Image 1 (cartoon, rainbow, N blue to C red):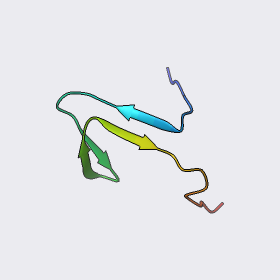
Image 2 (cartoon, helix red, strand yellow):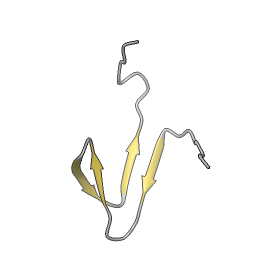
Image 3 (cartoon, rainbow, N blue to C red):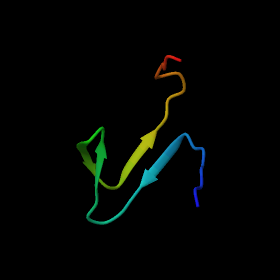
Length: 44
């Protein structure tokens, strides 16, 4: 089953877990991630 949610800000918290971004270690949890509308342009 796949569930999809939409949100501008997501906070993740779990003990002993580290976040990764693009295959690289980013930060320890908890972490708050926010989307900025229009910040990234993608080509079609």
